Structures are given as C-alpha cells and as structure tokens.
Image 1: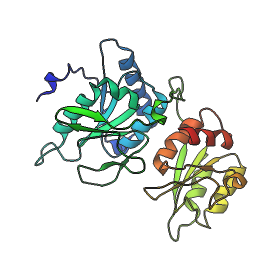
Image 2: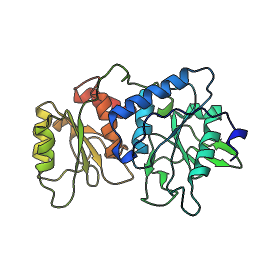
Image 3: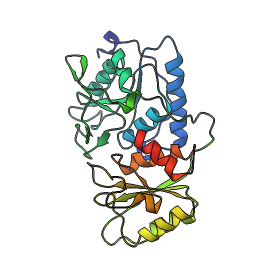
Length: 288
C-alpha cells in the first residue's frame, strides 16, 4: 500500500532462487537486467529484491560492474510475510522511495532497509535473524529514511568511481575460493582449492589477516605457482593491513584491507578477468 503514490512499478523477474544459492551466472543476468533498465528512458530508478544471505556480495558485484546513471537499490526482508510485524512491505516501500530520489545515484549501489541506506562496499549482514541486520561496519551509513523521505549525510568516494569491470562478454568468472582460518585448522581445504584448479584463493584469516602455520606453506606455494592469494580477516571490523604483520611484498600476497572475505572474493574474481599479476590485483584492492 502506498507504492502507487511514489512511483509506477514495472516488474522483471531475473531469477527465482534462495540467495544462499546465488551463482555468478545469476549475477551476470542481473547485471544485464540492471544495465538495460538504466538505459531505458522510461525508468528513473531500479530496485532489486534479493534474499539477505548474499545480498552484500551481489550489491558489491553490481557496483563493480555497473556504474548506472540512475539509482540502484537492493532490498530484502528478515521476517516472513506470514509472520507478526513482517518487515518486507515496509522495506520495499522504503527501497522505492530511495530509488525515486535522484541523489541516490551519487551513492553507487546501495542497500535500503530498516530505515537506513548503506553503500554496497560497506554493507555487512551482522545478525542472523534481527531486522536491523545490515550495518556499515567500518565507515558508517550514508543515509536515513524517515517520513517517506531519504536524507543523505555522506557520500562514499569509491562509489563515485567508474565501474572497472565489464563482464557482459564473459561466459564465466574465474574460480575463487575462501579458506577459513581457525584454531587447529589443517592444510587440506587450501590444498583442495589448489588441486581443483582455482585461479584465486582468499584467506579468511584471524586477527589482522593472519594465516595458520599449516595453511601458510600451501598458500606460499600457490602464489609461486601463479595463483593469486588475498589475505582478508574473519574479524568483522578493521582492516587486513598491507605489509604490517605479514610481509605481503615478500610473499606476493594481496591485502584485502577493509573488505571482508566474501567481498574480497568478488573483487578477486573480477580482477582476475583483467590480470593474474598480484601487484596489479593489489591496485584494484587499493582503489575499489
């Protein structure tokens, strides 16, 4: 109720899947649909309804591959439509309000839910069940939704950069996996990715992107063999800083810095469509 007072809604279904089962093929289809909508003079803004499990990854993928002139807003729901106080209708309404605001385009791709607007690079799912799950863990929210209006208090500098990657002519994206570090971890998950022919590996390290002693030699050899290795951290805030506790220059590893492991994987996949040189990949991580 009320959507008709904000905008005329046209609907296109790109896929019908649980977002836990998201694939790069669906990302490509979604990116194409967003680009077509952006080019349509009859359309002023774009809303993507999406499951919350992988929404942060999809949002970042779209920002890296589509720099639209029109607002692009992702939205989902944490509570079922049959449940008490379902949040879906309100979130959808707020997403349409956000997409109808021309200034949203300056923010790049955003997630608008639960009265807030968060940029694609910084948005992070922080809670498994609560409606206010999406947070900007490092750099803060960019806007607020109140009284049927979105107000922006900040603009992400990276969000205003041109999209660096074009995947429209690619059949698939390079295979990149994540190795999760923890107390007592063994080398086998890292070895499995190498044996499977993965072109890139993201280490979800402990602390400042630190890597377990049993995983380290596998990733060291992987880098020597031409696999691009990225150090990220499983810690939700902060940065896997470059050449700090780990000498990345010496190891030929890439520091993810403030990107979490799942977003580092997205950027590494896309970077590998351009180059397999770890130094060049580091430049993408420094910039985007």
